[in-house]
Amino acid sequence: MPNYTPNYNLYLPSRLDETIEVDTSLSDNFTKIDTEIKNRENEIGDLTTLTTTAKNNLVSAINEHDSEIGNLTTLTTTSKSNLVSAINEHDSEIGNLSSLTTSNKSTVVAAINEVKGNTDTNSTNIGTMSNLTTTNKNSLVDAVNEVKGKIDTNTTNIGTLSNLTTTDKTNLVNAINEVNNKVSGVAKGTFTTSGDGAATNVNIAHGLGVTPTFYQVQAGSADAGTAGISYITADTTNIIVTFNNPLPSGTDNIVLIWIAEK
Image: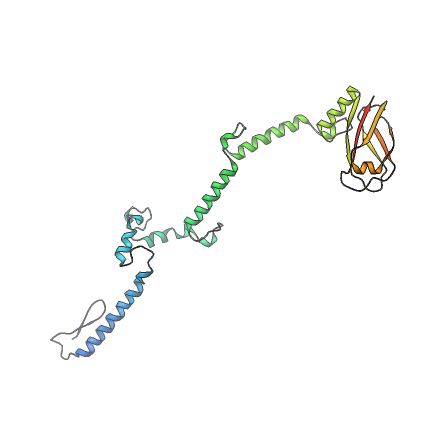
């Protein structure tokens, strides 16, 4: 009865065999050996395509990165038999690289480096936290909240501008100036408006609270000069300026310099 090798089923001739076909047995054996060698070669791959410095054999190539790989027994994964098993154990945790929101999705290292670069840039743009003039320097959120709290407190202390009893309610400076004018008896300023090509007069609020005894207005822009001041009157609220011609159309193109006294 013929015998065969346990791994590749090669024919083992024996003197006890009734018939031995040497040519056939050798041909079959060499064919099987050739096939298996080719299979192993395909599994190993082309050594010249290794990205390691050593390309002469697998042992040299593996040894080149042995220290970088480390001791498999020190892996904290459940599987420590080989790197493939260990990596597969956390594959789902790593996720799909294509789903990264970074520009570079080639490797996890490249993606992390990109984020690190952006973080460094942001750190430079943000500046040094200890240089904040706020009391709280723990984080930008805390610092902004501190400033916001002070603004809210100031807003409460300032109150609602529309509740001012002054004629001018646009801002505190204007309102204070209006009150000061009433106290001092002298008001002056620069009045700016936009011409519409039709209007021939403007009202300038003087804030004195009474009809001024003296008032004067002069053109402070070319378009105001072109319109030409015809005459000026005043009442307890405004200085009324009438022009010879319609005010030329434009944005903030009519500027008048004025003064009024009680």
